[in-house]
Structure formats: C-alpha cells, structure tokens
Length: 621
Image (cartoon, rainbow, N blue to C red):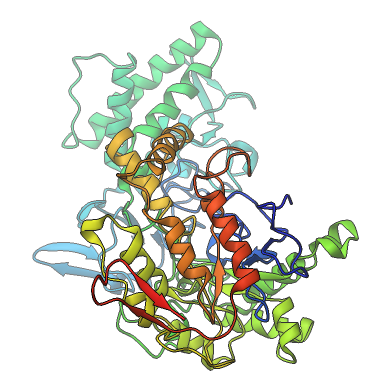
C-alpha cells in the first residue's frame, strides 16, 4: 500500500508508518483498519499495524426476515410443496400445529390470544389447535378468524377442478421446498377460455392465490386487487363481512375472467405481473407487518430462539449480552450488561463453540493470508482490530488472545508483543479493567482521553470544556508521569470512521439533503452530496458540522506519554474519492507532528493548565 506521508517508512525505521491493511477505504464498515493507528509499544512512533478487522458483528448473515416477499408465508399457506396440508409447515416459530399448543390459548378481557414463550401475545400468527385453524390479528394479536374455509388447504378445495393435480413437488413452483405467496401450481383442470373445464397439462400452472387463501382478509384483498385490475366489475361490493359462499362465487367470476383473458392473449405473463404486484401490496408479505424500529441500521434484528417446532435448529448456546462486563451472565438487568448483542446484524449465535471456532479459523486465515493466497509471508497481517467489543461474546477476545500467545508468543517478550499489536473498539467504562484482568492481550481504548480532546478542543467554543480533563480524566494521569511500564497498555484517538465522521455525514443528510432520512440508510448520491458539504465545511473558520482544532488535538495526543496514538485516515486524506487521492487540510500539520513525535518525544511528562487562562494554555515539561 502507498505510504500515507512522505515520512512514513516501515515500522523498523524510527518514523511513523502505515502498514498493509486489508481494506483501505476509511468510510466503510468492512475495513480492516485503515487509520494510521498502532505504534509498537517499544517505539513512540504513530503507526498503523496490519490489522484484520475481526468484528463478529459484521458477518454476512442470511436475511431471514419475514418482510421479504420471497420468504415462506407465516401462515398455513406456506406448507412444504411435497406436503400441502395446512399442518406441516417447515417455517420456524410462525405456525403452531400440535394440540399441545392449546395451553397457550388465553382469554383476556373477552378476547382470545395465543401467548408465546416470552409471555406476549403472538401477532399475525396462525395456529392449528386441536385440528382447528386459528388466526391472530397482526396488530392486536386477538383471534380474528377460525373459519373452516382455511382448514382444508389445497387437497380439499371446494371446487374440485381447482384442487392440486398431485402433491408431488413438480406440481408447484417453490423456493427451497416451500410454497410462498408467489407460488403457482398445476390444478386438475383449467376453465379454458372462461367457458369449459379442461384437464390441465404440465404447462398449465395458475397462481396459488387464485384458488386458495390463508385467511379471509387475504381473499378479500385478492378480490379487490383483481377488481382494480379490471377483472371484476366495479359495481361488486366487497367486504370482510361477506359470507364465504358469496366470496367463493365472486372468486369464481374473477377466475372465469382470468381464463378468458389468458385465452385471448395466449400467455400468463400479464397475470404473473399482476399477482406479484398484488402480493407486494399486502401487509402479510411486506414490511408494513414487521416491527420496524430504529435501533439498528437495518431497522431491527432477527433473534433466533429455540422452539419445539424447530428441533434441528435449536441451540444450547444462545446466550445474549455476554459482554466483558457480563461474560458469565451474572447480570440479569437490561441496561447494566455493558452492551447489547445485535448492533448491526441478526443473531449469529456467537456464544456457540462452532461459531467461535469459525471465528478462530477466520483470524488464522487473515493473519496468514499472504502465505495462503500468494505464498508471500510479507503480505500477512501483523495484528487485528476487534470491532464492537461490547456487542459480542467476550469469549472471542480470549480466543484471539490465546491464539496470539500460541502463534507469536506475545506473552513471552515485549518484542513479540510489539510485533503483533492488536486493538479493541471497547467503549464501555468497564472494559479496561476486564482487559487488564485478562492479561492485556489487546490494547484497550483510552475513551476518556478521546472525550477530553473532543470537548476541550473539537466542539464549538460555546460547548467546550476546559483543558483539565486532558490531564487527569484518562487511563494515564499526566499531571506527573515519570514511570515506566506501569500504565495499562492503551491507544488513543481523535476520530474514527464511525466516531465524529459517520454521524456528521448522517446529520448533513438529514439537515441539507433528505429530511425524511435517518442519515444512516442512504443512497450513494446522498453520500456524495453530503461529502461536498463536509469537505467545504472543514475549510471554514466558523464550522457548521466538522471538528475544530484538529491539528491542536493531534499536537496534544502525539506528545502524550504511555499511549499509542491512532491517526485517522480521514484527517490525512479526504474520506471520499479514490484512496489517498486528495490530501486533507490537515495533512501537512499532521505529518510534521508525526515526524516530531518520532524524533523528539521521550522521557517523563508533566502537565498543568495555566490558571490565568485555563481554556487556552497547557504547560508541560
């Protein structure tokens, strides 16, 4: 990788360096760690070790959310194709099918609910209890339908012509063995040209929702949609209060008109388009029936739970919030556990030994990627950065630390430890003590120093604190620091891609570009426009969004003793555009400071603020 400044040589030299990094884009979550970050402990030069980001929260997780229209319908309509009865769904925790579930039926204030294992009513839920189909409302969870219309399934459709030709899988279109709302099937007969029942051929497939519906609401919605498509007269009134016989007769009229149009056009392509649009418009199969929130970038997360309906998928290791603060699960009060499990992704069960073993495999691969992929040991990584420490099982930190001890002997000498530095994104105030108790296998974050620099220098003048916090509110008390090897190994930083940058871009998008956006789920065009505003703002004396006094902050951090300074890529080069293609306004100042740190910084350190003007000056000797 190209050097980040004219002065950044290899770590063996006494200058600041930027080692090879897995991904050099500073603005994406998938980066290895492109900031010029981690100095060797024995050296005070600011460096960026080769760091593979082992964030357990950024695993690619299959999106199993029921909001996608390809997902098996969470009602009895989503039976496996090889067995289309309404009681054999393979979908996890969405349809109850055994008589044992009758104990979950509860009467509350005169209404009937299905109470789940969590003690809460299940919503948009179909259960088959003692042979009877019960549907519970998507909004209230109250029982809304138990009509026998929907117990028969495809096997016993009232109109025998519309019954399935067979129960074999080749009579249905399916997704991984499941029927979906978009599935088509081969009926026994088709109403050819809308006039004559004719035996269906292997090519005569029709929409499943033309003949069978999981509940009355869906049938009425289907009929109203077909009415809007011109396949039912506008003067036909449709209501959920209509009798089943009336709705069945109306559906037959629609089917007659569909078959007549197929005969005229000689194709069902138009019907496929109409049916897809109809399905997409229904809350049963779109995002409107999901509990979308704002606590995750994707609007929520899917937690996998154990259920007697999914015995092959159950796990004994679904242990949530086993953070450094709560690694053994000793804290049961939410909010006091040091973090929460699913920051950016669905639950990947990272307490499971199999998942943890794969994390170790991935770490081994990344640390040896040059040797494995290109037979080039010089392309291997030196260390790693663990993202979102407070959102994964702390076992992963111990596994990574043990691996480095076994592979590199990091616990045997300072030289070995310096050659294989790894850092943690550990925000919680309890984390440094945890890391220390484990033997300081990784560098903990000096978060208090980050806050001290932010509020004393980077904020607008009206929101700044004094400079005193930079002296004492840190992992190292720098009022008088002349010791050696007593401070806890740590790193300090001014900014990062997701700290004081990503949030700033989000605010610009909400304020200037798209007021309806949350600023985090954005388009490429919105990001590009936001960076135009961001880059221009950095050049202003009176800033609206970006940080003040970046060079002053680095001057303080880069002359601090007993910390490894981490320099942010975006403070040397602009965050947008091609990698290292445009220098930031601070490039010259920061590279000079980096060179000065290597050349001049040594010995003890003492700091105090001038009482005459405590907000402006710091004295050090």
